[in-house]
Image (tube, rainbow, N blue to C red):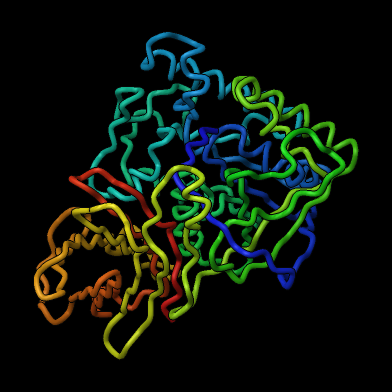
Length: 437
């Protein structure tokens, strides 16, 4: 688990969220998607223990090696390219030991071997192989990884995740929340949602979990008699249901041991990791946002606490007869930026996500309050009629309209906005899932 906190959020907590308990039985096949080794123990130990007790099958997919954690990497070797491999191996062994305590056999642990702190770059660059500056590689190298030799490539990564879903045939899936502060978690969340949409099986129940949220869990430290609540960090609250899994005293003791088995991480941040040892674990049922809804954004106040400059004050997407319209307003006094990127990944339920466009709108300010826009699909320029894609800005308000024909009658679209200065990314919004129907 590599906690790089780039950004954070804040929302007023409301009490009208529907709550319930997740129930497991021996007919379940439970799949946990973990961006890093230890996410399964921190956020899903109760899920695993309850499932095992009910004689359900449990699988864990570890998406990355966890080899980019700067808090621990130099403890293993002074040269990063070697220490990253040693750390990856250590985290693999720790995951096996931890999940043995929780009751998962080794052959139900699937290590994909993709680059820690590289998943967001893979997601936003679906046309090039990612090169890791830490491992100095662009392919899976670790011998314990099922995808050894495969490139760090969007098509490969998504295809492998989808293939594992099809092989495992889960009835319940637990995956990271798309609003988690760690970029790997957000990227893996989008890839998981896309796979679930492509499989399009209404019998699969899916739940999301948080690991990284500023100042959460509270209180920090070992408080096993306390309850875990949702982090309060979105400007607009999604309409989700909160679900819980409760732990007995014996299960709390096992979770404590499973977390401590991730020794490389526990030595670096014991209080943070022990903060997840509570009476319960908490999950949300993810739902795509509706057109015209206000989109959850990063809190101005919290970002400043992290010494980050907030950019976007409000955002929404709506629909007219032939266009989807993207609106966003910037905070006054934002730093100068040279480029805005809007990522748009449409998807049809039950159809190949890979075959759908992966758009990036590259936007710069032009004259007469008009925006100069370039449209790319997987890195290639898409030539378009001027009237089918246009944008305007006035002071801090930006409006971009794109013809619906580019979305190929999609059911949903995944959307994210980033800001750059001389090709250096300054900040980004969360990824949103927008329901287009």
